Image 1: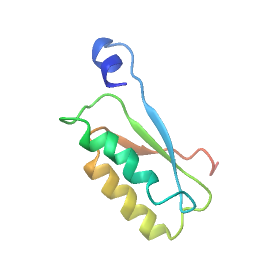
Image 2: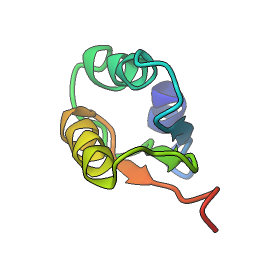
Image 3: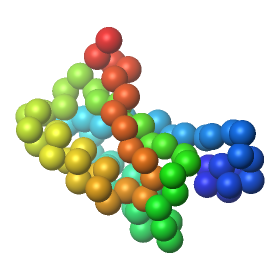
Length: 85
């Protein structure tokens, strides 16, 4: 994704993932491993979208988790409300 975004100024590849309370505890840390620890710096191109599932658990915990993810991620991170529409 990063290589394509670097090589082609007119193209932007993004990544879409789901987030929810019923997923394994390792789910979000594994995404963050790729988006934080495997990138040497922040990249402004190549967004990561997290789509909350119907069961997100407590709203406050979800928002705290998302904000922490966004702070640590080395790509722009956004919520994508696919199941809630």
